[in-house]
Structures are given as C-alpha cells and as structure tokens.
Length: 432
Image 1: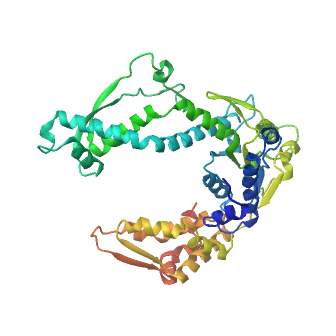
Image 2: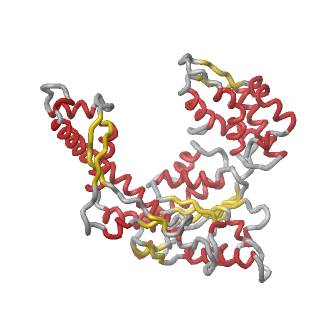
C-alpha cells in the first residue's frame, strides 16, 4: 500500500463528508505503516503505531472512517465496544478476546483471497464431477452430447435448473457447551482425520451443485497452514482495532462503586494497546504493531478522565464535528454509496423509478437537522429514519404489475408525507 496521505483522504472523501482533520490523522497513520515497512527489521521493531482517539457525537463518521481505511489496504478490521468488557476476575468478556477475534477476521480475509487464487481449478474439478454424474444417467442428458460440450453447457449456466444428486460432507452440528452461552464445540474437529468423514446424498440444482462442489474442492486445495501463517502476520502488522464507547469506561474513580470497575477495564486494555503477547489457538499474537482507534462522544466524561497510562498510548486526538444542514445535503447526494442511490436501486426492483429533486433533498436535510436539534442528536443516522418513513407508502404500495412508475421526491412530496410528524414533533417515536 503506497498511497500518499492526500490519495488516502481523496478515497475517504468518496464515502465520508467533512471531518477533514480526522481523515488527515488516519491517512498519516496509514502512511506511517508503509514507511515502517520499508525500514530495516531492527528499525521496524522500534517504531510503534500512533494510536488515535476520535472524539465526537454519534453518527458523524468515526467508525466509517476507520472501516473504510481498513478496506483501502485490505487490513483485518475489528470493531469492539469497550463496555462489553469487564475487568479480570469478573464474569464477562476478557479484553484479550478482541485479539482472538481480530485473528479470526484476518483468517477469513486471507482465506477469501486464497480462494480466488484456486477457484478456477476448483470449479474445473467440480464441473468434471457433475459431468461424470450426469453421464452415469444418460437419460437425463441430450443424446449424443460430448463431455466437453456438456461441460460448456454447465459453465454457460444453460443447465442451472436441472437437478443432480451429489455427495456432500455431513458435518456434525456443533454442541453448545453451556445453554444460552453461545460457546460451541465441534466434536468432529476434535478428532480431526482419525475417522473417515461422513457424507450424505443431496438432490440439488446444477447451479447449487457447482457452488457446493467448488467450495469443497477449494477447501482441499487451500493450504490452511499457509493461511494461518499469513493471517497472523497481517493481524500483527496490519490489524486495526476500533474500540468504541471508550468514554463509557472513563471516569474519575472515588475508590468504590462502578468507577473502580471502569478503571479496571482500562488497566486490562492497557497492556494490549501497549504491546504484549496474546495466546490464541493459532499461536501467540504480538499486539505491539496493531493500530488502535479509541472512539467516544465524551459528552459526560472527558478524554482526560482516562487513566494517564492509557491516554499516553493514544497520542493523537481528533475531534469530529456535529453535522450541519449543508452536510446532510452533501451526504444525501455526494458519496459513492449515498443513501438516496441505495433507495433508487432497491425500489427499481419493483419498477419504481425514484427521482430526488433538489428542493426535496434540501427539505429532507432541513427536517433531519431540526429533529437532531430538538431531540437526540444521532447524526447521519437520522437520515435513514427520515427516508424510511418518507418512502414507507411508496415501498408498501407496489402493485406488481411490472409497469414502471415514476416517483419524484420534491419539497411538496416531502411536506405531504411528513406533514403530521413534523407538525406534532412525533417523528422521534418512529425513528431511532
């Protein structure tokens, strides 16, 4: 990843409106990773990430900035909530579980990439298996058709709906260790290859068979030891952990009560951020070079209320701004994944041609801003609730005729469909 900070910010601008200071900070942090990778091994060991605290109200882009940053470089990314953890000695999730979860994310990421590398070979093998199955029952295929021709018919998806009987692995269902705990154990994985794997026959369409058999063959072709090795390397050197609601574990302790527990969680998080070894089922993971983001509104507690040792491990602090009416207009129109575009695509499935007029966009932005001002400020998430309510009748009253119906969302449409709610200020009971 050799993108310059300016190029990184330009990519983030495609999805996130405003918050220039935060974008610059994360862009520099990402570039520093690239710079570190170009140094000698001895020098690399001396340079640790400059972790960042993002301070700002909900819905202004804190999580999205970190998530998009990770996608840019295909880095393992994990979002956790600080309030989910309890200090050592209490019932709850221990903080080391965030590292184990990051490793699992990294493994999935590497396995998906490896799958793409072997998918062509795997699919070719799967097609040959289907062809051989069909040839055993010649009455199910056109007379005189050659195997190669049949293979092309399958690859061209001309036989997708034809049924075929295949053998698939019969994986045992995992058992729950403690009912309701979510902790499961797979007996089959314990004994590994000690016993032959059970299979069962399934009658599926050729389209389904191709997917099932391709995945099974890909699993055989993938070297999982290599996947684990690369996944651990990426988790250690490229991993990003986003700790949300870190302000909820801040507080000036008075020696008793919940403040003690909050400080305990901070002290348990400290060695993880500081750099230590965490034991996982794939081996020890070194956390020294994982990039951490701390995030919170800090409306009650302050950043300074975190214990000094933890503050010191987040040397960069950026403040994100509340969103304005103009920000809402831009959010509705500019991002590559703008929510208005999402609704257009969704409703187009039912032959509804949705068009957002300029005055309609401004009215939606105005209403969303006023609702954030008069009730709970939930940032850009307000737009989702307003649009869902605004388009509720359109979404519900589809006739299924197949005829294209055009709906123009202008100021008149917005005022008509949101009149009752905006007049009586009752809209907040419909919107989270």
